[in-house]
Amino acid sequence: VHGDIQNQNMEEKKGEALGKQIGDMLIIYEKKKPGFIHKDHIPALMNDFGIVMIQADAIKFQATLTTSADAQGLIPKATVAKAFDPLLRRLEEEKPKQYIQIFDRDKDGKISVEDFNYAIVNFGKGFKEEDLKKLHSLIGNKDPIDIAEL
Image 1 (cartoon, rainbow, N blue to C red):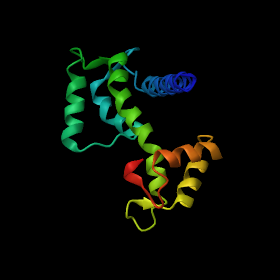
Image 2: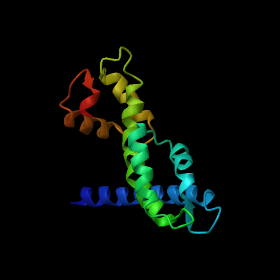
Image 3: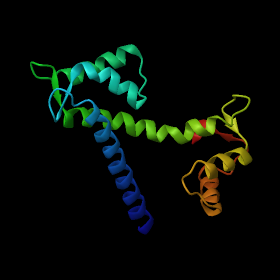
């Protein structure tokens, strides 16, 4: 139970940090009216956040936001932040996996336990030896480790 509460607190802190990041970025785009983002700035925002989508999905995402725009093309900042939040959360979740893939030298989707340990310890999340042991037991103590299972 204590671990669940700690995990929940960590997730809340990550959410707050991400919300601040979104808010800080949106300030740059509040050019015409405070609290609003012009619909034409959505592609630039996507680029600034590092969000890459296939063209059809990008058009659909932009169209969804544009329906919230007023006659001048202004979208409430809170609406924009809410739309970007799940996309950025997904990006944050993928970062460790992308980092680990760097160590997949032969690009077969697997890395050695040694490379996995190095990647995890050096990713900057403060992992310790006991954390590595838990991770290994969760993935079945395999060597090599299938990245897709992470």
